[in-house]
Structure formats: C-alpha cells, structure tokens
Image 1 (tube, rainbow over the protein chains, first blue to last red):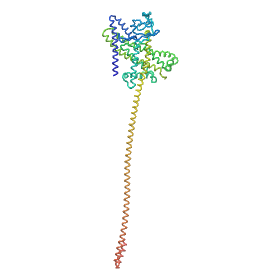
Image 2: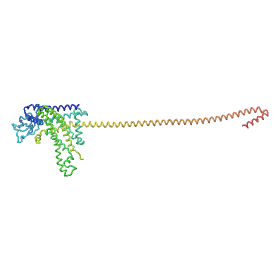
Image 3: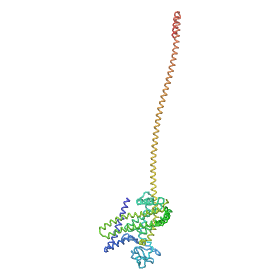
Image 4: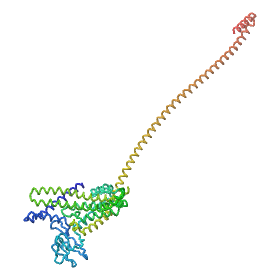
Length: 352
Length: 166
C-alpha cells in the first residue's frame, strides 16, 4: 500500500516537473516568436543559467513569488527585502551604502548604480559579504525542518509500538540498509555507532534535496558547490578528528614498505587526504548540475526544432532522463554516504 | 574553474554548514537515537524469542525422549514383574504339590502302621479268646469225660495229637 502511494507520488512529482519546466520554457518561446533561431538558443541558455542560479526571491512558478531577506555585512549589518532590487533594475540604498543586483550577485555601487568592468569584462565593483537567506538557504532550512518533523515523528511512533508504522514502513528499511550495508561493513561493528547520526542525516539530506531539485520549483540545492563543499568539509573534519594513531601512521610513515618509499609516499598520502573530500564535493555538484543542464537542454531543444516530431522525441527523451535522474538522486546520496563511511572506516581502522 | 570560485557563495556555505550541523545534532537527539534504539531493541527481542523458541523445541524433544524412555522402562519393569509372578506361582504350586505328596505318603504310612498294629492286636485278642475258649471247652469236656477211663485216655491222646499238630 505504502509502496503504491510512494510510486504515485514519484510519478506525479516528476511528470509535473517535466510539464511545468516545459510550460515555463514555452512562455519564453512564445514571447519571442519574432526573434531568430539564434536568440532562442540564447534564451534557452539564459533560462538554464537562471534555473541553476541562486536567487533573492522565491519563485514558485512564473510570476508567483515572494521575497527573501537580504543580509549583508559591509562594515555593519544591512538587512532589506530581496524584492527591493526589482530583478536588478533598482539600486538599493541601505545605511548610506548602495547595492545593485547584477547577474545574480550583489555589488556595492555608487548612488547611480554604475557597474565598472576591467578589460576582460569582469566586474570590478566590491562585493559585500553576503549572508542573505537566499532561495537555496531557504530550501535548506525548509528541508531540514521537514526532515526533523518526519523523523522525530517516526521516532515517536516507536515509543509505544515496536513495529514501524506510516512513513517508518518505508524509511526504516533505508535506515537499516545504511546501518547494515554502509556503516557496519565499512567502519566495523566496534566504531560505527558514533558515525550513524552523521551518515543517516547526510544520506536523507542529500537524497531529499536531490529529489526536491527535480520538482518544478527549480530548487536544486545540491547542484551548488558551496553546499557540496560544506558537506564534504564536514566529512573531512569528522575523518581527521576521529582518526586514530594507525591512520596517521599510514599517511606519514607507511608501514610495510622500504624507508625511502615512505618518504615519497607521505606527500602523496597527505594529498590524498584532501583529494578524497574534494572528489566528494565535485562528484555530487557535477552530477546534479549535469543532470539539470541535460534535462533543461532537452526541453529547450523542443523549441529549437519547433516541429511535432522533435517535440515528441525530446519529450520522450526528457521523460526517460527524468527517470534516470530519479535514480541518480538516490545514487549520489548513496555514494556520498558510502564514501564518507569508507573514509571514517579508514580513520578508525585498528592495527592489523 | 574560475567561474566556480567566483560563483562560490560564502553566505550559502555559512548557512548550509550551520543548518546542517544543527540538523545533525537535532536529528541525533530526536530521531536517530530513539529510532536506532527501538530497532535494536526489536531485533534483540526477535533474536531472543527465536532463541527461546529453539530452546523450547530442544526441551520438548528432550522431554519426549525422556517420556519414551520412562515408558519403556515401565514396560520392562512390568514384564519383569509379570515374569517373576508367574515363576513364583509355578514354584508355589510345585512346592504345595510336593508337600501334599509327602504328607499323603506320611499319612498312608501311618495308617498302614496303625492297621498293622490293629491287625496284630486283633490276632493277639483272637488267640487269647481262642485259648480261653479252648480252656473252657477243655474244662467242660474234661468234666464230662473224666468219668470213664477209656474216655480219659482217648482224650489225652487226642490232646497230645492236637498239640503235636501245633
């Protein structure tokens, strides 16, 4: 029963996702029917870039949106609404400073809102430190609240009933899978318990955010490098701070190889310590970004070709890739969790 | 790469780290610990239940085996008792027969002896009576015949003859 409901839910979500993206792209196509082909391509490119970009307003669908708070640190705290920029058309004045939104970024300007460029057409204006609750931050907070609600409710059910019920029927096997097939084999029975909270949180966080990214809201959080960097950094920090003597021994003074080799191996191993979480960061970021770009491009191609055959073909292809992306959403969460567990396992491995 | 670095949003990184660490801590307290504990407790109780079921099964098998053994023992004992009783019965009967035989023989022997003694006594009595009768007769005859000599002579002869005959 629960499985069926879940299936239907997934179907609805991703069919909506395709349709709404399709519709929003269509509105682009229609508004510019007089333009030549090349400009449609430009439009598609911009749509995709816009879709992947963070934003200071939360756009539920085309035209329906609400502003989010902009919080800047620039010799003092500056707080104002994200709608004040009017999509970059207005220069905002706050406590005597002037700010302008340009290509999705906030720059400090003069009162006229001038943007200066160098010869490579790079913006030279100063950027204030931006702690705004952007769309991505908003989604992260929302998703965290949702996860907290979902799992604490699930936990409460166990208080008076040993059997899983409701959402737990679906979630418990996943939790047990993470424990029995990710944590225990990679970390070992002795140490796995202290990492469980992190592994479970990171798996569901990434998975749910990946899935949320597939909804028509365009809230791809995991395709942002700052987010994946934060996640990878946490794995890195936990690995280093829980590591035992044996782990450091393997890095700086590799046992079982000749002494000159140890000296050569030490920098390589040390480099590996940083490359591992770096790969984690890039893998998740690149996979999610690529997925979004490919799907958006395929939808865009419908408007490039503008005939029934291409519409059908690319719609089918988009559908197929959406299913693939659903798989990738879970797969990337799994890989991130799995590799984190692997690194933790290496950090606490006993001397053998 | 350059674009990646220039697009890197410090604010997003800050919020993500903050919210995510808070999320881990909150979920650990309110979700993962109770859930994992509940799951562990359940798994343990299932394992215990299975183990005790296995034990009960073994005990049951043991019980059945011991019952069987007891039954067999009882049967054997019964058989032994029956056999013993049968033997005892035969023994008693045989002994009784033997005793009866001996007793009978003794009685027969006693009776025979008594009969013999009675016979002997009867013979002695008879002899005595015959002697007395003979004396009586002899007396009467003597009284009658002593009147005539020849008759006396004849009688003496007859008596002598008779004695000789004896």
